[in-house]
Image (cartoon, rainbow, N blue to C red; front, side):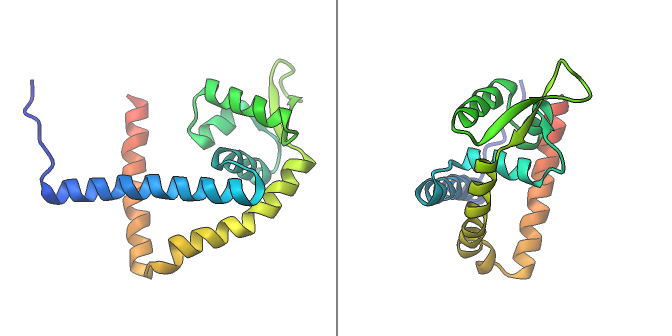
Length: 154
C-alpha cells in the first residue's frame, strides 16, 4: 500500500475553494434558469446542444457531449419529451436507432433563456476576471479535463 499524500494547507484551501465555486455556480445557474423560464440546468444543457447541432443527435452523441450515463440521459429525455421540449425520431441511416430533435417549444425556450443565461454568466464570472485570469481558467480546465478523459479510458 502506498503512503497517502495528504493535502497541505494551501492545496486543501485551493481544493475546497474549487468545490465551493463549482457547487455555488451550479446552484446559481439552476436557480436562475428555473426562476426565469422553468428550465433546469440539465434541461438547458440538453436544449443548448440540440439547438447548436446542425442535425438531430443520436442519443449516444448527446450523452457524450453532456458526459451523462445512458440511463440518466434516457430518463431525462423522457421527462423532456413529456413536456414537449424534445422528440425522438427514427434515424434515417439506421432504422433500428433514433435521434433526438428539439421541438418548436424547446427552441422557443432555449432562445428565450440563452440571452439571460449568458448575462448571468457574465455578471457572476466572466466580467470579473482579467484576460490573464480567463486564460488561466481555460488552461486549468483543459488540464483537469484531459486527466478526467484519461481516467475514462482506464
